[in-house]
Image 1: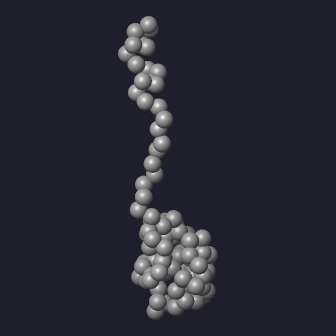
Image 2: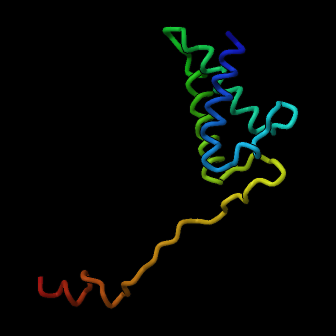
Image 3: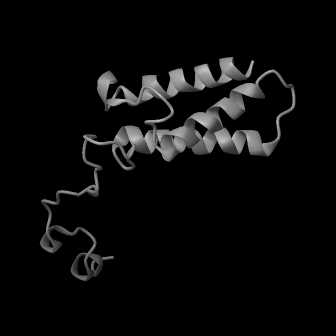
Length: 115
């Protein structure tokens, strides 16, 4: 049962990470996996172990949500796997292209004087 939960967690993590990483770039054993990746797999396995229970504690849901959030950060490039040769972490911030200037504003004092 424990091995099945770990296998399911590893499978889910690997399938999500293949969006960003080549299969050959992902660790093939726990010896080469980073602590961050092990934590994500462990938290998901913890959740899968509790799937058979009708009532789950908040800690079970928190573990799952934390793991999925960290996994999403890894896939988007906001967090790394800490592996040699992995793609750069995306440190950029969204930028907004503006084409309007203050002269284009509709609600100015001059426009409001007619009210």
